[in-house]
Image (tube, rainbow, N blue to C red; front, side, top):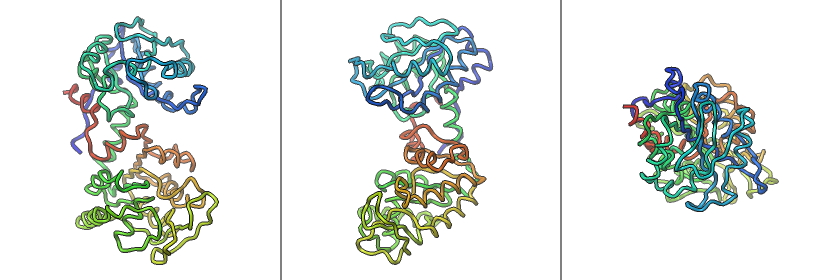
Length: 400
């Protein structure tokens, strides 16, 4: 990971009084879950988008907000792809009437102190392919382009990348800036020991992350199905647990690579097993040397959890992605709960991301005890992998 990320910030433009009377275009991430009747079931993303909009309004700007929703077909507007459910909630949260504009690429009327929501950007032809023609047209609508959608930062699309290239001024909104500051703090200049928890069912889906972190962290805690592959690579029997035999050598090389520089992948000493994968299945705690052929490992055991909790309490920085067991079933949630509470009580700076991780944070009630909770699933993972996120890259280029 390179030096600290440098980019223009909406907050700085507002402080320098550079937004008054300007047309400000904000790319937000308002892609919220809807039920079959089209009602919003969870509005975190809409609430997270409010500070950028309020900042621009307060600074005297005319504000346009755009987002994608779902996976529409480009060039075909269907009622189910409309941001109609979003506009009502946005109005409520802002305490202002917000108008939804359908065909907006060729021009938008909006006055200072006013907010308009522009219809689903993924309906526009060329959005997904990051068309320069479309991006230039959209960039002409504004004086200031703001990307506040970290959740889409790993995709180069016309509203996330192309517009930032062509707009007169391009900057990061407060949500995007907070994400990048938190990730930079955790990975570029971490307080040591740096501990990463990577859980999940498959090593293959997280292999690049494991390798990237293995270079940086002092302890790499693996959980879920990933831990089974590391257990087997360390010479233990794992019964009929989920495993990826073709990745045993990769797991061994990660263990060796870290050991060479005095870092470690702590291997479980005890586990929680069951004979079948079911919510009603009884759980039994076993030493890792006593796993039977028909056992499935579904969580780390209490001794392992206590050992790992100690490492977390001594940490300077914690990066958390993925639970360490099948926490949806309470009898296999002990490990994840113990680690969640250890993170909550740790003095370390902690950053957590990924859907299952957020569900665990909510389940164990530690939301306000985590240093920073990332809103971007895919973007968070790609940042951990050490990849350059296109939407961030272009903002950094524009800041030079």
